[in-house]
Length: 329
Image (cartoon, rainbow, N blue to C red; front, side, top):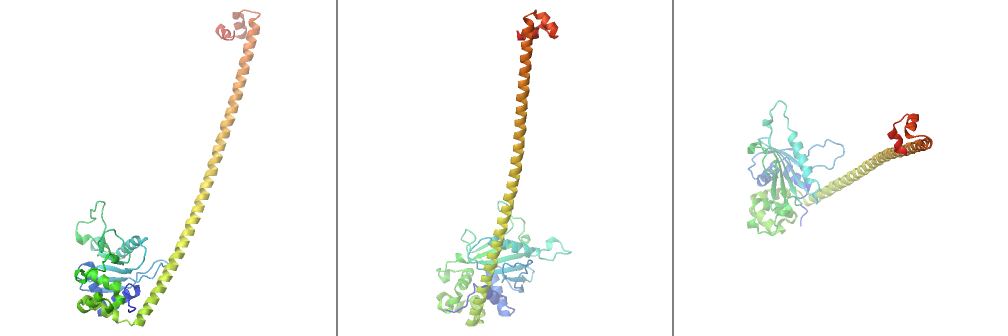
């Protein structure tokens, strides 16, 4: 078994992105098969999209290519074993790629098509389609634009794990054959299906020639560099995750302190309100006692006076009505 492995970012970039006719022909064949449209002319514009921030999550070994109609494709072999945030990540790439077009002095009708084409080594969509294309749509699958030519932002996912590797070669379509070759490239002529494809399929022959331009030692070096890159990527991501976790912990701590502060202030307000209610209740009780005492004194005075004079006389002395006096007698 040889060391060749097209599931390697470096190798994928080399086989399809090197500045030579053979690589360009291989790239055109790849895009023709997976975009399902004939590609006659393509130019590799850049092997990486430049990061705008200092903490790079990884060195992106994608291919940024352009057709003669200015359609731009961002092509990447994605080997993550988890699909966490993958679609968010590539939606971001698509939006940034589309927004990178120079529109100064132009109408938006001149925007060119942009496509992010990703080969996944995990299942993303819960269906049986190897290729799924995502577009901007309204709820209910109503398209955002009326005409196909206006639909200029697409994310195309190629899910390699959905290929049945046990399917007979004669029953495989071009996409399945190419994915089978990607997944089993290291076996070379030792694999019966690979052997037949190398002998009879022009596209696979083209890919095989590109693979064979790298010596076995060269492949080993590529694999070593690939492992170092991804180890570094994982280290950086772990560091970022730790930093994010620490930041979230500090934010939660500050939020808890703020909540406790607000709770203490609320408790003080409640305490003050309760004190005011308590004071008001005491004052009311005191006023009630005073009123009762005054009432009692009046009653006693009337009773004493009424024991020596009639009601009318008592009313006259106290300057109140007879009815008021009768309430106490």
